[in-house]
Length: 116
Image (cartoon, rainbow, N blue to C red; front, side, top):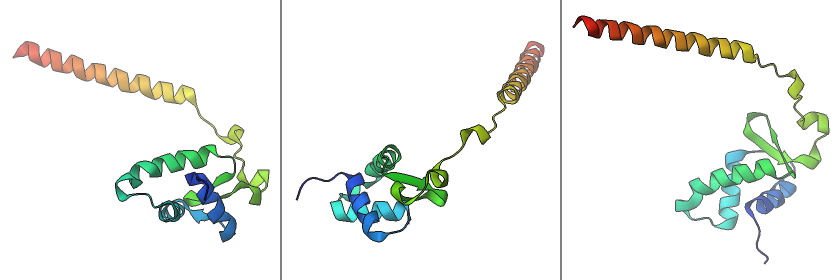
């Protein structure tokens, strides 16, 4: 049998299963099939997750479920990033306030040290 990557094993498994699967359960199946030693499983889990994210055969769904991208339309898997609002000014203002509070605390501490 030819060498298979973790994502190849996952692809074959999901192809036969016909529905989405929780990431950890999918990883357990890959571990079983590839006989990954227990001492490497934690390290390989992170690698597997990264490889799934980068492999365009797969799609990430809600609740950390994964499936084959071919089973979904573009609209079902696409996230419209224009709909995500990030107010950079608000974040920046919060950082300024935190820094000012830190400086005030440092000033108070140094004044207390002067009186001792």
